Length: 193
Image 1 (cartoon, rainbow, N blue to C red):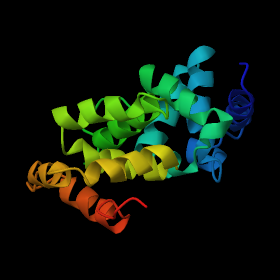
Image 2 (cartoon, one colour; image 1 turned 30 degrees about the vertical axis):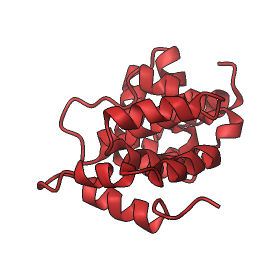
Image 3 (spheres, one colour; image 1 turned 45 degrees about the vertical axis):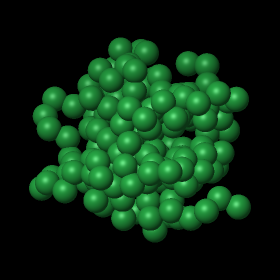
């Protein structure tokens, strides 16, 4: 346990195990940004039941956790590592949209803000146009300003937004239309100034 977030999360986990034990939601109330750190800490020291409980709580509110992360404090890299170790996996069916949200958050963090981010983003959107909507939502949740700007710029390209809209699935259980509504409300269709 080397990161400050992991140490803090581990302390909360240990305190929640001391009798009387506290449920994870109560122990991490107001500290959602520490959930990926807690998962890593529990996984690292072999507290698999704690890791499972953290995972379960995370999957109930992934977007609230994404909004609470502080990328400049290393939370993004911690989330990536936790996702690699199974934070986003569940045994049963996930709520609609959870898998897409986590995939988009992972993609936003992997794209980063490097010099080749625009090129990598272009390839991703070419392969899966509807991902534009999910990426925009995740970039806003994570407050990734440069990627949000790149996504708005991509949406102004010829037929990019149109392709994303045409790729939306309006079948029952799909969240594409909801994500489209949120993206438009968030200004995805606005010109970049």
